[in-house]
Amino acid sequence: LCATERCLANLWRFTSTLALIMTWSLNPSWTSAAYMRSAKSAHCARACAGSVQVVSRDGGILVDSSQNRELLQVYPARPSRDGDGVKINRIAGESFNKVLDPYLMIDEINSDAASDYMGGFPEHPHRGFETITYMKAGRMRHRDHMGNEGVIGPGDVQWMTAGRGVLHSEMPEQDAGLMHGFQIWLNLPSTDKLKPAAYRDIRSDEIARHCGAGSQIRVIAGTITVGEVVLN
Image: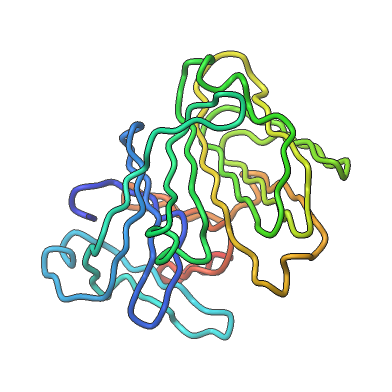
């Protein structure tokens, strides 16, 4: 995968031997989820320059990129529509959820045709999970029944906890140009499903990042060590 795709690892979840890496290709029409595990591969060792460590809260190293991994399975996104006719690419389904838990779904909007996204997502309910929205291009406005409102643009993140319930809308703040972003649905533990709803915008300049060797790492949640640099 490292040798053939110039990828951004947006989301990692680990068990003792299995790593989940959400990867999005630079090809604008392709989105997929890739599952990888530790393996011996001289090809991958040559392709993956540098080292990235993902560290647990207690300081233990969950994975080190100097350990080689093999691709186990790819789940391609499917064209779909949601909201008021918005064209999206979606990764979801029962077989996917069995291995993706606690992640429920991933949606991508990627179009420079206003007719594909202008309908937006008028007011609708959510309950029992969180949505994490990452914008690469374009602008979207969030409003909810609690009075929260905000616009996110390129590089910004919106983190919403539906908890016991929220009514919100997500509408385009533009009538032309490219709209490109991702939204991840993250399930909440049973003990947190009735927690109060919450909303937060995270601006691009607040997000820790590391650039090098033709790649960029942006840390939205958790801690990653890149060489001697710790990103929180």
